[in-house]
Image (tube, rainbow, N blue to C red; front, side, top):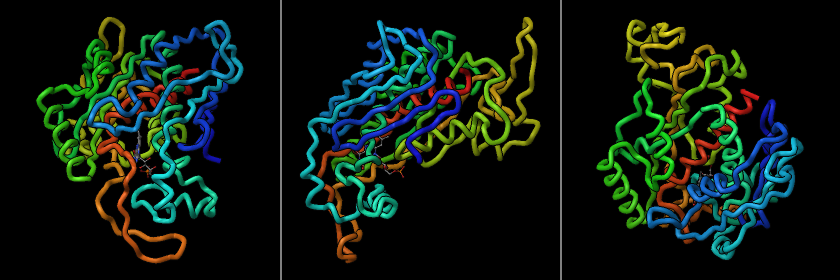
Amino acid sequence: MSGTWGRNIKFSIFGESHGKAVGITIDGLKPGIEVDLDYIKREMVRRAPGKSELSTQRQEDDSFEILSGLFMGKTTGTPLCAIIRNSGQHSKDYEKTKSLIRPSHADYTGSVKYMGFNDYRGGGHFSGRLTAPLVFAGAVCRQVLEKRGIIIGSHVRSIGRIEDRGFSLKDIDQDKLQSLRSEGFPVLDAEAGEAMQKAILDARAEQDSVGGVIETAAINLPAGIGDPFFDSLESTLAHLLFSVPGIKGLEFGAGFDITRLRGSEANDEYYVDDGKVSAYSNNNGGIIGGITNGMPLLFRVAVKPTPSIGRTQRTINIENMNNETIEISGRHDPCIVTRAVPVIEAVTAMALLDNIE
Ligand SMILES: Cc1cc2nc3c(=O)[nH]c(=O)nc-3n(C[C@H](O)[C@H](O)[C@H](O)COP(=O)(O)O)c2cc1C
């Protein structure tokens, strides 16, 4: 069973890309939470494809329907279930190549695991479309967190080898973090952003794709959230972040670079100011011993280049077990990084709320 996650709040995700709908059930939300549906819509739009030439021209309708758990604008406390109906699928795109395994997509592993009974159309249950319900759930969780002052935001840290400057590990401006959310291509350095967008368009022109890194921060988290060992906040976040299709790496705070520092440079030394405990640095990314220390939570995830590309690739035919080649003709993102940004923020909100409630 892999479709259900959570300790205090249980999230159950379901659906296939070319089936009737995708959706999520959230069980364990407190009763009486005021849910702003426009807020959810704005988050869904951030993830939706077809907004610019940087993204796939697939026009997916990401409007959601709430089936249960919401009454007169407030949560009832019973399971909140929402679906996003599928429409505009081009299932025929997948008919021609249904026995050809798309390299780096989940066609082979999904077929082995489900003994060929998996719905292969559009990636089925493995499709990026399944991240729409995640964004829905995250948008509900974020509203609860924001009432407590906790703000989550991200920027595109890199595309290919082109880098944006990083967030300050320690002082992250709340207004900036919030305003990044309304940017179509969220970066701190506009010039780097231009170069990144060009790299994406170049990849598209060459029937190829590119990956990148997303840097995410959550601020105003109190100290004391999380647990040691198996349920460390790092473990919980890793669990959810790696559930997002296409995520292949994760580092907290200074990340792998912490290994280049000496203890005297790496340690986040504490001080007290007006009775409040803080640290002079934040190389640990706000988590020590699996528990928040009150500094910003900060991490970076690696997003791989979109698997589906138009170029000819070597693969196998799973039906006749021959070596063949494949050219993928569907409508795919030359880069999924920007569309993954709201998804990463959504699962961060799910992880934090599950630990706080
Ligand atoms: C928002 C989003 C959109 C995606 N869109 C596509 C797509 O259009 N084409 C594609 O081949 N993969 C897409 N993916 C990635 C695949 O779903 C993913 O690589 C595949 O399921 C294999 O899983 P893995 O990369 O985690 O191993 C998308 C991922 C996300 C997060």
